[in-house]
Amino acid sequence: AHCRRSCIKSQAFGEPQTGVPDGWNDPQELAGTAFVNAELANAWARTGKGAKRWAPGDATGDTRADFRLMYSQWVMTPLDLYVYDHCPFCTQTRLVLGLLKMPYKCIVLPYGQGADPAKCNGFGYAPTSLPTSLIGKKVLPLLDGIGVPGTDGFGVMESSMKIISFASAVAKDGAMPPPTGRTDIDEWQSRIKPVADSLVRPRIVKL
Image (cartoon, rainbow, N blue to C red):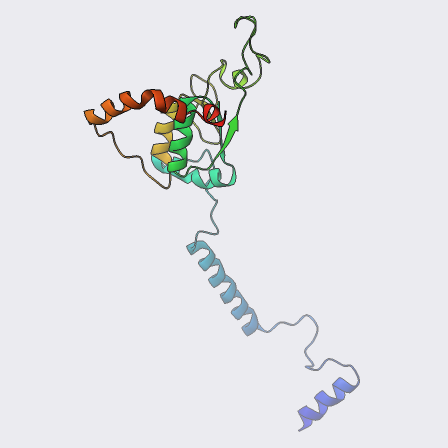
């Protein structure tokens, strides 16, 4: 009863309710806080959230695993695929990257861009621009982005088959079936080639 009256009186006059001196801390409370902090830190470490995140340039010792880890980077910053809209090699590259669900951005370049008029009978313009500025010559498709192995010392990958092989090795989703070796398919492709040339070239279809 005395304690209750003291507390009521202290509240009425705005005095500290507990009577505990300023700056004093309960040892039991401190011990409990330390325990909670330690448990939180351990849980953070167990989930890997206290560790440095993997970043481009790090190595796991497994080349395939390293490139697969790049996938999260490519989702945030898609690869750049430079193509011509009339080129069948560019078209097959786009087809495979799409089937493999690779994160990429398609950049269509005009065919005359990057060609030197002095070397092309007066045709072409901006000879030092894309794609020459990336690979040193006028050729597409080209794949550019974080972690993409360069070709001939350049920072981009050239050639549809190289790009397709790279994508097949590192894609997180999808898969490319192996060659069948069927001669009947080769014969069929030969027969439909005149029609296929018109169908697989986007510019011709658009016209």
